[in-house]
Length: 238
Image 1 (tube, helix red, strand yellow):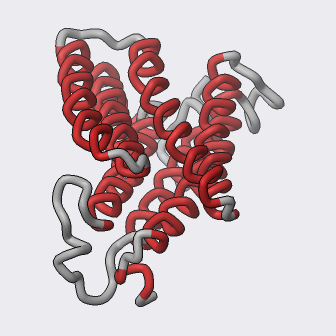
Image 2: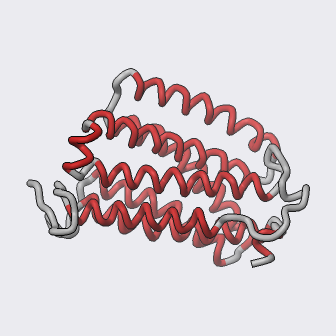
């Protein structure tokens, strides 16, 4: 059923679209909040996982691509964008961007682990996974199951890294991150089960978006704490 508000384009599910765009806005705010401030010494600008800026870059990429995926997800429920871009092209862009988010989850998770071998190996393996995933999208695969199969291992890896950091530090912000990562699992499970509280105002997609807002807040709290724990001057000068 197509519904519309006077000040919006016609939408299939207005509440789903609004929560999608709120999720995108939240992630854009986190991208801005994680921008470095103050001078950047050489130690912070390290390459290959040797400086806090490597982690900061992957965090901003993670939230930025999450914002893009949320915006595209909302556009998929908007009649105007479906007609202007073509529903298949729009959905292909959406799942491709989720693949980029998955890649960044692997890379930022690798930087949380204290072992250099993991920091070197994971980006290479994740890059190969991303290339195969994008090849599937380019050849016409559109089933959401490939999205789940692609991002669940990365999410499990990121969750494990954050849980390890929380156990090792026993600090509250680290626990927020671990909780946020685990909440993503719960939100995804409820969405796939099509758990609904109300057919219009709280369907499975709306509930998923609200839970993801909470989960991303937890991930952001972790990222700020982790940067401080690495003695990043960009955080200490705030």
